[in-house]
Length: 383
Length: 219
Image (cartoon, rainbow over all chains, first blue to last red):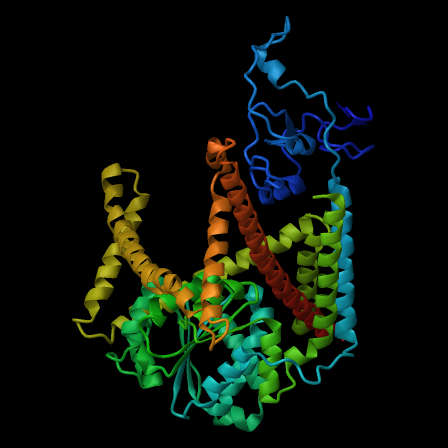
């Protein structure tokens, strides 16, 4: 039985928080799950905010929070003075030195939001967003009349539009089913465009699950595409999963055919010869939800190839890839929902991105509102 | 019937994964383990079919000279199996393929990083063009970018080292450093904020796709 040091209520032995007052119970061996996750996000050292030292002096009293010691908020905000010379501690009679060190501190812990309150806030936020998404999905009220078309979408469209019918395009499918919902929005209009241009597409993947998502994307494009367009397009060739990442890409630049596990079949299907390099492709398009894969393409292929590289990336990794677009190593970087919508618009297609317009608008507005409210809350709280 | 069951199963799995928003629970854990297991199993099947078996099948049609790399790979793979041996002498043979993989891969990554990332990024300030026809503005852009980058570096330096020299004569220098450092801090926070916002936007798209998929299945 654990006695709460704050309200005196009795709690079971395995309780980490008091059932009465929600405070952390002293002597909880491991931090509760939520706290341990939050602690991973908190820097080990308190971040300096007002010209005080980032590394607190050694003699700051510390609060025991789970398995990690952190200085209390009020103490950390006190002006820093030179570390005081440690006074020889007076050992209390009958208590060992170690026991005195681990003695519970006398000052109460700083006020903080209990995990239950945090959870309820999180649930409310999730509920608002989910409600708006449902509302937007059920009532497709907002149809974008003229969505903003970025230069990236225009450039990517131009690159594909000028391809001759005999062109070969290499597609690398480097995302997993976990991000398929976002990536397929971007991949689908591009595949539609390639089908219309009747160019030969050769697929490959640096990830084992890549061939599967490629098949899904082709199926969706065939289903949405006009029957005559689909019938006239040359059958796609799939190299499948190519293991080895950097090494595989280096090998691919030298000879795409021999890099494949089935070189003879690949040579027959694509018409490529074994001595032909990656320059045999007129365009390379990389679909990626991972920064590392796109970086590998830039570092191993883009520097050695004359074929332009278009990267179609998840919105989450796009900011990290923009420096490569600035230097011209990535010729065009397409990312996120806005580019998917813009590309559909350029194609004159009313596809999946258009169907998400209302839900996207409402959810993005909710997100913006939550960010603004959180910022105001932090400012008012002085954090 | 199978289609109907599939719809129900898909819905249960999706709802189970989303239930993590409320709190970690057993249903979420069950669904996550199921998905991880399926992913691992699928990956193993793809590697076996598309890489190992495909290489062996295609080896039949290869010329004897083309077989050399395949044979070398096979020998290295067999040597790697020796890592499971209990004898230290036998286990040491397994270091050969590991060393080769680490050495060749490392050299390739290093060369690629230098040629593909570091050098182009170092040269990139010369490409910054705030205004294509104004040399002065472009120079200002490069100077500001460099200034902010240095601010971030100063912020990331341990402050304890900088504060060692604090005295009345050098106080003004410390104030400049402090201001520069604050600028770096805000630049870093802005960059992290942009990353967070773009990630949140991407995840919202995934959520919308899932919700619309479920709605499409049921209605």
